[in-house]
Image 1 (cartoon, helix red, strand yellow):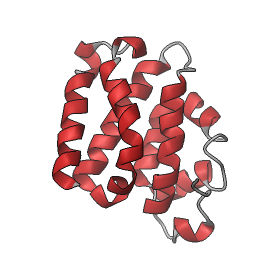
Image 2 (tube, rainbow, N blue to C red):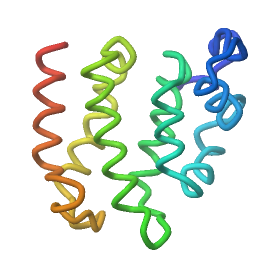
Image 3 (cartoon, rainbow, N blue to C red):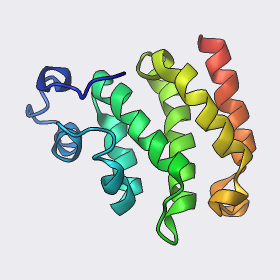
Length: 147
């Protein structure tokens, strides 16, 4: 069981990096259960905030994002964005900051596999969002190479 990140885990978030400060403002002190409503209000923006978080908060809140995507309780047009953002963030972290995501990949893989195999369930048009199965294969290959 992971603990909510402490202020120390956020580092010097107030030292001028506006992206980290925004992430701190939305997420700091909240449980993954608490952030479900935040993801529901603006999943694209929450994904961007995850992108800029320090390592420890990222390794905690990525599971809130996973839980949001897997729960499937989306507003009318959010399911495709949520699923696509989830896969894209995972791939981006593997490419650019593998130390952030490798320690938690084993726990994320079942969700990655589920999302990548169920594109239609997320109402994600392949012409708009790309092929989720292909994204899943790229993620799995990156993970194998890096692990």
